[in-house]
Length: 379
Image (cartoon, rainbow, N blue to C red; front, side, top):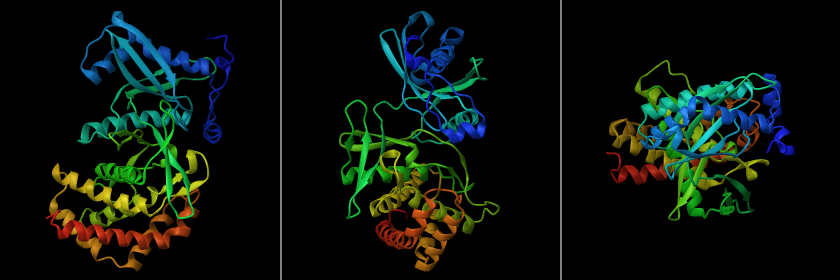
């Protein structure tokens, strides 16, 4: 293996991230040696612990039959690998997120803490469990790698907008490396973006205004698999968890307005992707907006069921939404995007579409309010 030319080839990296952090290049050989050292350290203690945390099955160093490392992709901050562990004729799968740049090292430590916190504090099962974190030091030519082992979502794949036709219909392509890429039906695409919104709503805290932010479909933050014809969606990374609006006041009015801003922001970001994951920016169609609102209200419903928020609070929010006029809604959207980073590449495409987006947002919100509250779903 070490005689293979790829062993001394450099890992692909984001040149902007590397330059900003003065990071040094890393070879494939250094990557795999570091991963091996991380997994085998102290008689495979990290793997033994991870297997037990995942399945409550005790294994021992002498029972390990095989450990395989499959480098999956090259992200802006991590180079994740799939880890397969075989022991006692059983197999377990994990993700090993490997940070090699200074930006990645900082992000990995923070993300491990966030995933641990949200798994502990929230009742949902939409994000991966994380098990073990550590570094490998030294690696010749640079400081160290930081890595953490987490849950591998088996059968889940990345997806992106492939194309949009002249009628505005989006084709959503799923990158399945095993069975081959495929396209979602319109019904499946709707369910995909509905679940994306549901997941974000479940992790939004109506009292502290904390939410998962930043995130982007183009970065592959969400993955899906098809189960009996229906998409199942997971969120595989959390870069940050904090308010995007000031939370100095904790009165009802501030909470309702913060929830409105969250929904509006989500309705725009759930439309944004890059064609085929790496091309020009893509702005999804109206289905994305309807699915977002649908998923948002389903998320509120699930939070009611778990006594995280009250029926009364959601009724207040419904009345608040119903009181908003079109000019007020449009003004809110304009103010939200004015707070986005001005260098954000998606800003131009969103600004050009914001008036019509505000119009269809109001239309779909009114439709859902009529359906939900007239039927007594939130009473």
